[in-house]
Image (tube, rainbow, N blue to C red; front, side, top):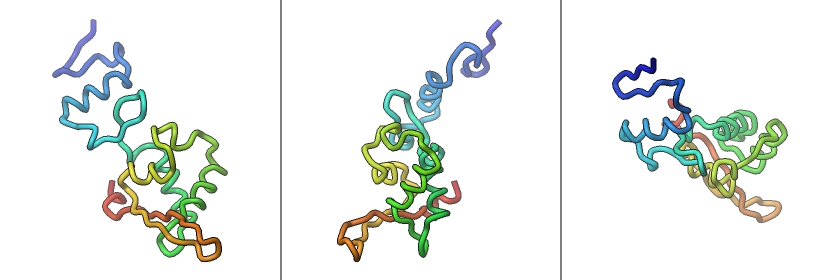
Length: 129
């Protein structure tokens, strides 16, 4: 017999993908407090894999506290051939940095090529999450 306690569904009869978004609504969470991935409801940006990859790249590639985004991308792609930003509904790595809201980002001009390059670092408040 399926038993439900205080509005919690029976875990054997419902998938997490379908139930989790409704649970967030009951808890008062909105899409502005949660990131979204196309077709899969809401997600918590700081805990998704691509953010973990960016943080790993940051710890390995940082120079004076900042990480060059193209260096981080190369580092990630050499270790994780998994899909990139499009899997998370973003058109670029820079959009991932923006949407995650756990990184600071700045643009710098490369002295040798003159190209504008994005650099990032973790926000101090995000490190405690």
